[in-house]
Image (cartoon, rainbow, N blue to C red):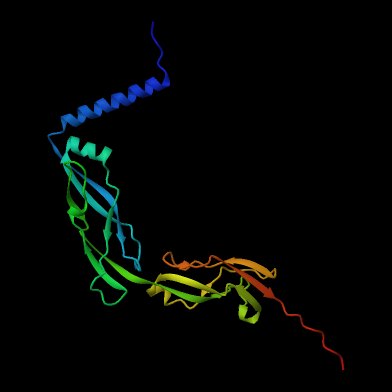
Amino acid sequence: MKTKLTRVEKTGRIVLALLVGTLIWGAAIDDEAFSVEVELPLVLEAAEGYVVLGDRSDSVMVKLTGSGLEMLSHQISFPLSGINRSVQISGIQSFPASITLGLRTSDIHPQGSVVVSRLIPDHITFTIDTVISRELPVSVLSSDGIPFRFRFVSVEPDCITVTGPSSIVLLMDSVATEAVSISSGHVTASLAFSSEMVAYSEGLVQIRIYEPAVSAAIPD
């Protein structure tokens, strides 16, 4: 009598067949050398008080070489996840500073007998800057376009601490809010986006708007 296989048994047999087929294929090509190119993110790490400007997920093409089974085992069990490099700032006199960093195949350590035969590119250039903090006034932006200097407005807090690269923070003279409406006397406003590399000590401010009452003229 033919026994009907359950779904779990069918899945198990399929997986087993794939594994056996993969092992047979790997053994057949184990005497041959193969090269595989893998694109990895490069992450630059700066010391405390410094920051690397720009996008720090630059891609590096890594060329791996090994026999059939070595490459197969590496890709399944020990795939490379990325390259981390520390930025050395000794000897730099002024910031922001442009730095060229050399990349070496010895910076990457694949498992087993697989070797790294090439990196593309093997040099990258980037800019590093100091991190500073400044206290800046909050500038309220109105959705109707009328400057708030012509209105009676109070902001809490009226100053925000801004932290980020000195080349960005030193150019800022205030922190603007998102455009707010004056339809009500009290508004909670978020601060306008400045840069992904700039952080604010507060995310929201409270704005109170006062409409002055004008008394009627006293007739003569």
